[in-house]
Amino acid sequence: KQEVTQIPAALSVPEGENLVLNCSFTDSAIYNLQWFRQDPGKGLTSLLLIQSSQREQTSGRLNASLDKSSGRSTLYIAASQPGDSATYLCAPRRFGNEKLTFGTGTRLTIIP
Amino acid sequence: GAVVSQHPSWVICKSGTSVKIECRSLDFQATTMFWYRQFPKQSLMLMATSNEGSKATYEQGVEKDKFLINHASLTLSTLTVTSAHPEDSSFYICSARDQAGVYEQYFGPGTRLTVT
Image 1 (cartoon, rainbow over the protein chains, first blue to last red):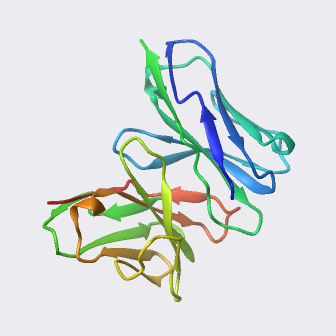
Image 2 (image 1 turned 135 degrees about the vertical axis):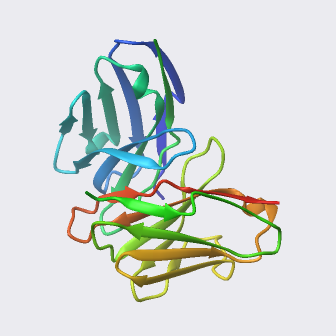
C-alpha cells in the first residue's frame, strides 16, 4: 500500500524567500506524480504533473523534481509571495491504477 | 480548459434526509470520476471511483448503500448521501480524468455538507 509523507507539516517564511517542500512515497512503481494547492475551504488546483520518465517540471516560479528510485519529490517555490499561502499536497499515481494517493500536506504561510 | 464544477457548494440538511451532490466536467469528457471526502485539517480520502455506464468501485470501509454514486453520462456523476447523520458532515470533493489526457485529474471546488 502506497504511503505518502510530506515534510514539514507547516512552514512559515518571509515574503521573497525561496523554499522547498518535500514529498516521500513508499512505492516507487509510479506512473506520475501531481502537486496540488488547496486554499482553505476550497477544492484542489493542479500545479504540476511530472511523469515517471521526467526528472523535473517547471511552471513559472514553481519547479517540481522527481527521484522515483528513492521515492522522493520536491516542490521548489521561488521568490515567494503572500498569495502562495495555502496547503500543498503531493499525490503519486501507481502504474496500472488511476487512483491518486494523497500526502498529508504542507501548510505554507508567507509572511508579508 | 479542464474545469470541473460541483453543486451545491454547501448544504445543510437534517439527520435522516438524503442529499445529492453533482459533479460535472464542463469542457471535456470524463469516463472516470472520483469522489473524495476530507475532514478538517486532514488529507483527501478516496471514497469511490465512478465509471460512466457501470457500477462504481468503492474503497474498503465505504458503505455503497449509504453513498450512492451514479455516472450516467460522460460529463456528470452524482453522489447521494442517504439517511445522512452528523458523522457524515464533511467536505466532499470530486475529480474527473480527461480521457484524452495523461491521467491527470482535475478537481471540483468541493461541497461542504453539514448534517444537523
